[in-house]
Image (cartoon, rainbow, N blue to C red; front, side):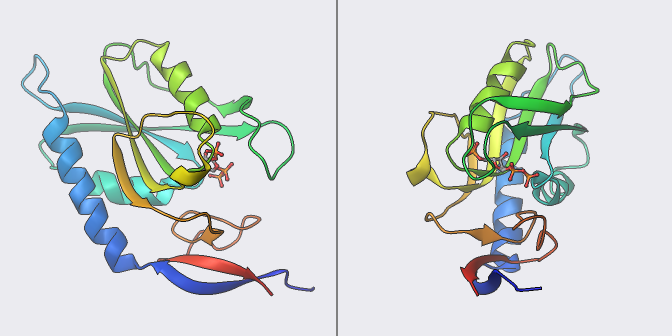
Length: 184
Ligand code: PRP
């Protein structure tokens, strides 16, 4: 079969990702308020599928004395596949009741911001005690809808990137580095 795309340069190396993830985890931990029980409680919400890779590394960098829970949502934009429509379909919702809880939403990438804006509105309506966001990659130049990014790994240019959770037609999520893709 003809290969339409090929892997190109490393944009962000595994070492850079590791270092940044540890820095972000330290900030998240420091900012999490202490609950009445004396513990720092945090529900970490990952948005399937891409964010899984980043989330699992991020939570393992949080201090063990924190009370950390993990849950996931699976969503997809309606409309054509190349442009996010802003209308989001929920395939799998949280198992956890987040009312009154500290929530951190983790995404691999924010592009137009439409998916994230919809999700944050939805989660906000469930009345968490706090709702923060942590995004590994921010293509801020492409933003169409304002979204709040509390913790950002890397601001990246408008390039097609894969690896560390990011895919090209389902491929290359498993790469340890973040790579650009070229037509080939
Ligand atoms: C990616 C990413 C965000 C969304 C960002 O998900 O994880 O959810 O696109 O785009 P936006 O800011 O323009 O709305 P994708 O639909 O590729 O799903 P995946 O994580 O399963 O690959």
